[in-house]
Image (cartoon, rainbow, N blue to C red; front, side, top):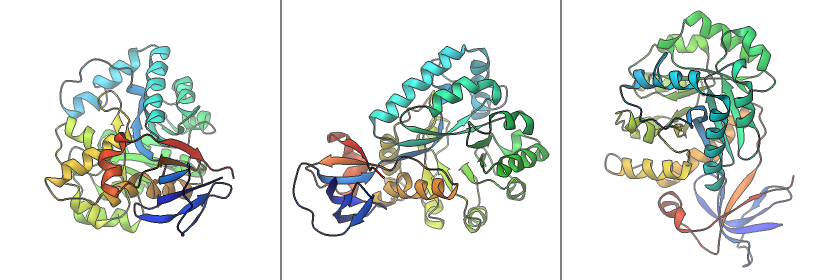
Length: 335
């Protein structure tokens, strides 16, 4: 099967077609047909917390009071029934599936005790890459064959020796180490380097030098603009995006931000336009090619799928701001 038209593989449009038997792109004017239109790589949501999807109560307070240790979120998670949590996860996955997301990277707050909820995240469509928060290296080893690595809440929330040891345990099993960093205030980049993360989230208070160090280490940074605004953080992402092409896009806590990555793309463009405009081509790249490069680097295979908007030739601005005006179908290649 061949699909063709205007194809976005890296945020920039090219005329051609994709052979779904190989996944190869050929740059030439395609024949017109039912499977012609605008094609993008199916987007990836690079940071979610699906475990809190079930929480319906309004989160009141500061960021630390809501998502910090012992805060609003963890109190709800610790008192919730497992069935409640799984139902919420299922609803969030449906939102992602219906909006075209093919994969997501989820930070899960429980270790081996949350085995069933982790399995709920990892099963079905979209493809779940789950990083768990085990109590220690032994707890991680209990679930290492089920999860894709470990997640840490923040440098300031943990003992550094614990962070280093649990990251080493994950790396020994070829797992990913993800961590929230400089979300509320600037944290120590030297401590972060000791933990040696593969993926960092937020970096709102990083200096230009911090971003350069992460770039030199080839560590991707995931930004979550809608969630940041919810928590009162009005970051201008322009300089960060100018300094590195390793910026990815995620939606963060499902209890306050639905995991629809197209809405995140739209918000980022709309928000930045009043500050310092980010090109829509760059925003598309944040959810298509860039996260795939990271996932492939970490040795994980995900379904290689595309979204086809039949019969229309969409410009980058339209994909970011007006894609909901058009129907799409998700297509996977057969290799």
